Image 1: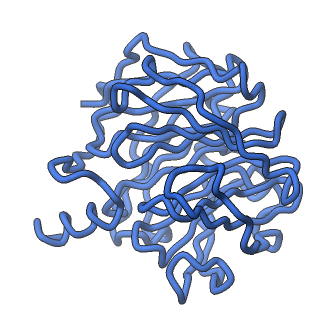
Image 2: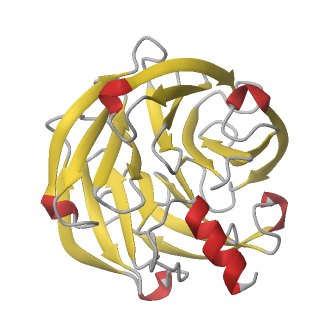
Length: 277
């Protein structure tokens, strides 16, 4: 991929100018001794998402059936996080797992384990979940009956989910970007050799790296994709254990330049920050 193409990809992902992704080095990753508890809002946190500039963080979970919004006074520093508000998704699903936002903050997607579907919301004020309104849902039950992770390609033309029944990543094409009603299933990539209870899912902005976290190995599993965004070309590279911080990890996210990794777990109801450069 050319330098110009990479910059365009990052722009579509909403990454601030100057933040250029460098693939994390999990072999040398280290815990920053920085954590943030979300237990006051959610005691079974499952989904984790950050605004592309690192000034907002969102957590979803099945205890309160909410998406919780936090402000970070120092971008990407979770120790500076403060709770802002919660948005209930119980009318759509009483066991929400992952949450994902369109790069401009005008759409929110929540995958649920009760309905086995992805729920789409419009936000009239970007990144303000109090302005969210439900639009539609897309069932993933034919592929996964316990969906736990969710991710979209930065241009909205592909959607991926993962779950603990199929133990694999499911890839969908969207004929209309960001409109889940136009999604069609493409293929499955099994991760059972590495993890039989996968929860979190993350792709690099270029689609050449995939990261999966699960509660059996208590680790992050890294994969290379020889063809960007095509999971059939994925190959396992290495793993990084997070068991010392939480032995039931569920959420994973990376800073927009790849230099920080964030892991969330339900045994501690906390988010942990790591350096990956």
